[in-house]
Amino acid sequence: FVLKYGGISRYSILNDEWHKANKNAATDLFGFRNWQEAKTIAQQTLKIQPTTPNIYKVFDKKKTAGGGGTGQQRQRQLGQEAVTDLELRECSDWEQAFAVKLMDRTGLTCGRVAIIFHKSRRNVTRWKQLW
Image 1 (cartoon, rainbow, N blue to C red):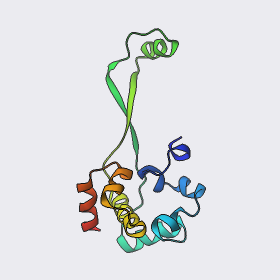
Image 2: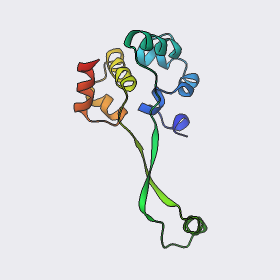
Image 3: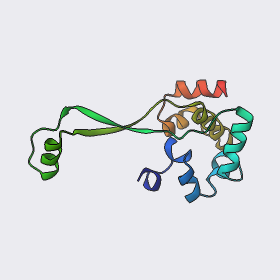
Image 4: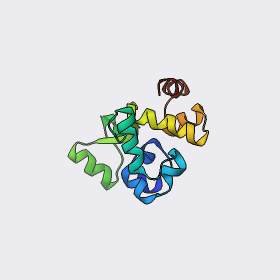
């Protein structure tokens, strides 16, 4: 769902499936002919392995209670916790390097890339200095 309808995000722009559906993205976002070339050059030049950001479900600590819908009843019966949010974990070296390449290629500021990668401007500024 996120890949198909989520737009540009840290998860989508580093995902093989998304690049298959968006053939010009590697050129427009990173300056490479295609996504495979981007990955190969990054691996050979930077000596980092490709990673795809993982999305984690954040669960409510309390069990679902109250309410009367069949979905809620089924959740209570199965003893499942309610999903309250989705969360992306810390950025890998791979993600940081491509964030910096995105800034260099497109002219996006650290603040704008911070929004796309759901990180602080301070973190992205540090990545730019590092990579």
